[in-house]
Length: 387
View 1 (cartoon, rainbow, N blue to C red):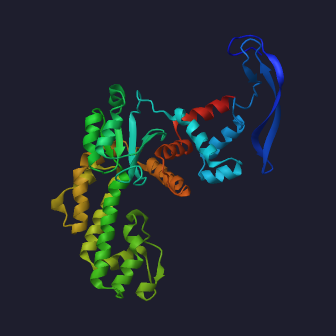
View 2 (cartoon, rainbow, N blue to C red; view 1 turned 120 degrees about the vertical axis):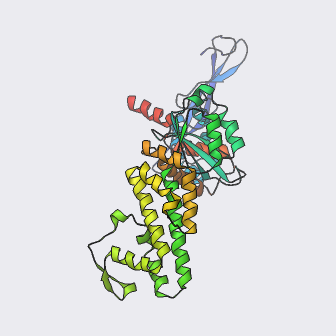
């Protein structure tokens, strides 16, 4: 061995026993006691020890243990549980998590042509509004980044860090109905057109339909036959008309066990309120619009002269008219929705819940990026397959 300082040939200088932690065996901690050769430089008197292949210098954990810790961090498991299973401390787990940070640096010179963004509840520790932002590639559903704040000022400062060329390359952005996003998208992504997410649009009519049903229930009063019927068959009122059963008859407890089909039950519910019937017809037309991706039905729905809607549904109509062009865009590309990002948000909630919350946003972001599909993890799996 040659001296790293003066390049002279070093002499043997005894041995040193070093303990290295390796992967556990049969559920028990495995520690290797290794006798390492010590060296002394005759010229500059510098000392050194022999290197061990599977362990970094001045490290007591093997690289296999570190790799397993990172792999465990990609699962929905709390850090304290990982520490117990691997016979390490929580601080070691945190260091393992921080060691992968460089792998998740965002490329500021690239953005996908189809972008999807949505907010999720992260808590007041990271954001003044308690909401953070998730950014994904709408085509392959790979996560790009997690943004701590969703307010316009923070988002502008974040996206302005991307090159002008990268922002010009974005052609389509799928987003919910949150109004402040619109002005920001037009400013920072001039070539992009917006698609209003189908789920959030349908939710407007769905919620309005439920509110009308509850209002009619309260008008009849608790304990009445109408109140019980409207409460019992709430799912039937929200069901798509194409899925309503017209041929099978069942004894209905609310109608003295008379055998009625689903369509007959709906008829009896509509006899209780004309407003409910009008709202139901509007709601069903709304569902048909998305099933057929029909601009003609959208025009019919937004024509106020054709409808005498209850106040709750009029509010939904107002929202639909406001985002009419964005809804039409969704008919052109019906496969681009915020469905995948909503699934990611559910997974993020699980990560947050099992950890009982996070104090450090950097750790929270890394756990999310490790556990979800992204370009870094995809490349790592590809390398493993090639081997």
